[in-house]
Image (cartoon, rainbow, N blue to C red; front, side, top):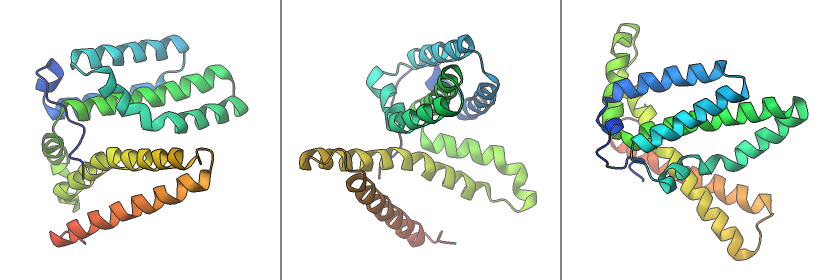
Length: 199
């Protein structure tokens, strides 16, 4: 299993506390919901590019964060064009890509252990309501780690498709992808069960 997307650098973003980055990410995603005008989306996109530069993230590392979304975004764009207009469609899909890119930036500049610790601290007041912050942070950590794993499985399936000359066969892509993801889920479940966390 991959250990997360963290890349070691000595940038300003790497030195920021994980809690600050998570809070900023939450605020930024909420702010993106209010963005409608194309120029505002452009400003948000440019700001994201600047943040990646401040974090010392290479283009290939940045592209890896949004690359798995390309087909999903294309489908959303087409659907939105059919039900609304070009401006709304481009605005919606651009905001989605920016939000994913910002989340990717957090994982690229923050160790998973630091993210988990920050989430546990942030959720600690919910202990009184019966919430276990450690378990919630574990689930979030597994979700973060699973994204590159699933993307890797999809890429392997796509490569196998090309090798067999079946690039346009949806079934040849969907079935192996689902099987691969289910196998990964089974492996993950067995690992959690071995650690007594299967409940």
